[in-house]
Length: 131
Image 1 (cartoon, one colour):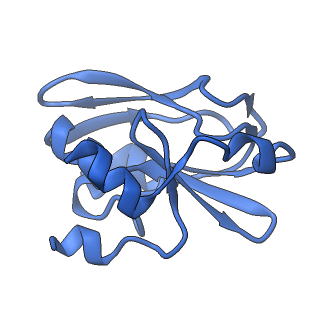
Image 2: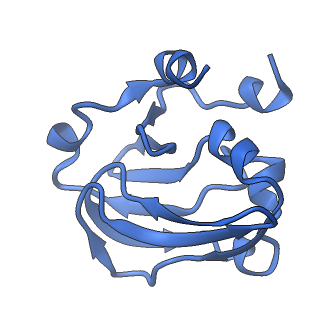
């Protein structure tokens, strides 16, 4: 088990496009899985949406660039952006160092959470899928 896997929050759900979501009361935190981060390599830039932006499930909400590639990031659940991880703008490498705790991307409020989580995988099942 890697150091990153030990930091995986209890109860996260993962999409087949390698985003994770964690329900925390009335908000959900969204980020990239450790697998996605490993595949990307060193992250050098991230473009995040503005607070107040609304997205539906599977819609592109951000872009990320690494030394290997540029990728789009998809919403694992629909919702309205209520917080953005501003630290990533000047220090995108935080995503590599800690994709779950410090390297989260956005926080949203979702009215469609119950429907949108259908099809998402618990972390252990996700890890088996990408193994």
